[in-house]
View 1: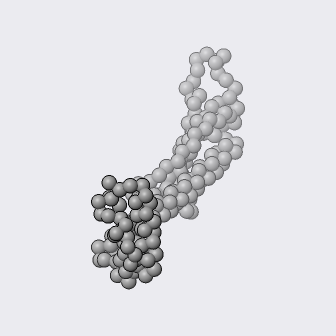
View 2 (view 1 turned 60 degrees about the vertical axis):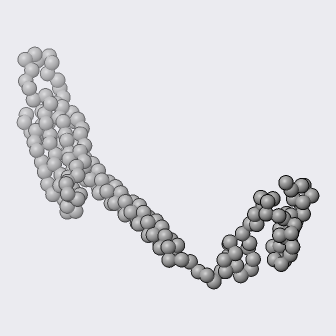
View 3 (view 1 turned 180 degrees about the horizontal axis):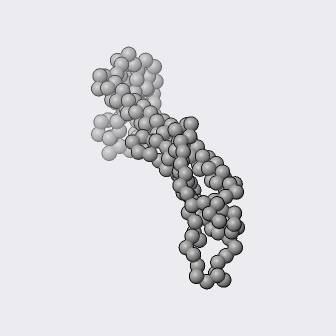
Length: 184
């Protein structure tokens, strides 16, 4: 068993041994004390007392290169996923713009009739508009016949994206006074 005074002397000698490696540490700190010397950090030596010019082993180099490759692949996948999301967002934004534009053109037309319209846009988008008369069924009771005719308008925009087409649709109801549609 080592006493408090011996322990203090032993620890002090360890510090001295770091500064002066040829000191009498082994005489002051017997092996049965359970204290081990920490790896030395001396100028010109790496951690653990290995000379700094020893270099890295082949295994250490291969592990470092493998970790670097895995991290670079992960970063590239995140980057490409971000670019894909931006492109999809831009395509969707253009489809919304085209659908709103077609819906406004139908809304501003003075006459409506049940019809199906379609067309191709310059940037590869296709559009389709379906106009349905919701009051087309004649009513037997003249009191239930209104002064307005209701139309359902659906505008769909389609664009190619990868293997299958994407679609965006807008639905609206429009009321037209009787006598302003082409049918009447």
